[in-house]
Image (cartoon, rainbow, N blue to C red; front, top):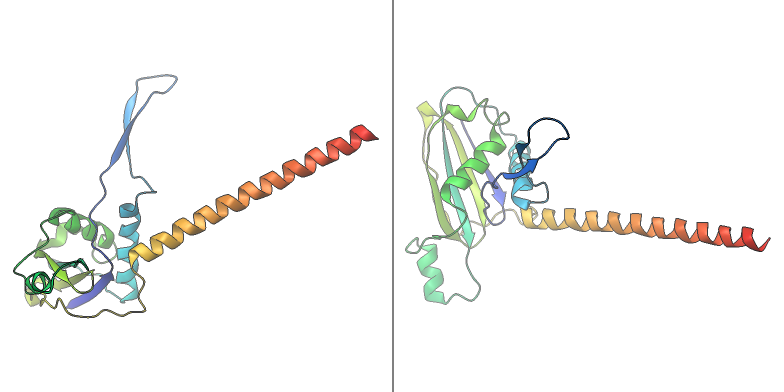
Length: 203
């Protein structure tokens, strides 16, 4: 069994855990590790999982192979010669995120959804390449049917698909709008209370 799906937008890697020292009123202090929910890389895990579910991906069992190709954006300022070098694979994106962090993020996103445990991943390859359309392509295969992903840097994804950057911006805009609405409501209540207090004093 095989299943292939695509995550549109610039590839991202697994976010680093943050930590802070907690000092309770009683007892010893301890270090608390946590994920920053305002870090887009944390939200990106859910974005990958969402696209797997939308592709109607099954839940694999037994040993599997996971192949990943991360397509990075080609700079608009690149010369024609430079673009051709990147599209042909002569030049590869030796930059962040690290290949291992791309692996970890995809595996975390699919853990419990695409497979029971990422310990079942026994084989696979992750490649970082340039493409006309930035995205991550993932192919999951049961071990006895394992085949590699074919490179296709000129493949055009579904233009109706929103990239992660677009959904992240919408989420931030909605959050800012909600905060502004709460602030405006609080200001109006304060003005109304002040007006009522003034009216009472005059009477």
